[in-house]
Image 1 (cartoon, rainbow, N blue to C red):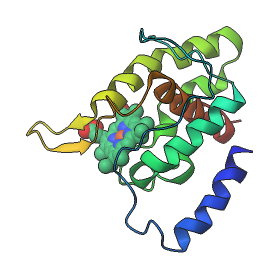
Image 2: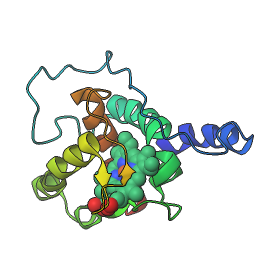
Image 3: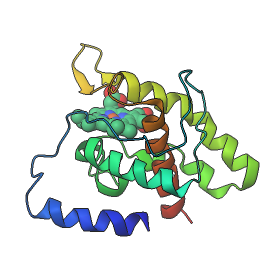
Image 4: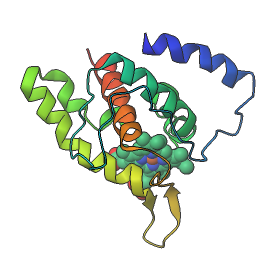
Length: 152
Ligand code: HEC
């Protein structure tokens, strides 16, 4: 389902609309999702929620795909995000959930603050102030769902 949704966006891409990739942070409209309050969580409360995954897929497409690849499959410019939790895919139940949780906080911190080289050059923008907490976890829920889809 997620793949099918993104499939239609690929046509837009091949039509040249985003020939150079769009890497400017864009807010994600998360007003329709269950609201999480002010306090940041350390783990993703949304994993497995299909509605959230679709919002995350769209947010990913507009913010991350330009560097990390369409459908979260890396084209080699930036790390393959499907490798982050690949070990979790072979697990089940609570074990799988806690495996995904181990990467939640790392993911949140990278997305909020971005990445720099040791000389201070920005390699990935930070989304602090652009993404709501709901947006960060929606994108992670999407990436985790894609991890399971690609590693059945
Ligand atoms: C301008 C290109 C660019 C954009 C846009 C971008 N990233 Fe990145 N990202 C990178 C690069 C390059 C790295 C590796 C940087 C490094 O390790 O120094 C990275 C690293 C990461 C990592 C750490 C990966 C690991 O294996 O440790 C995560 C997680 C991540 N990005 C998530 C995202 C998400 C989610 C988005 C969209 C909200 C995003 N990135 C947008 C370029 C980008």
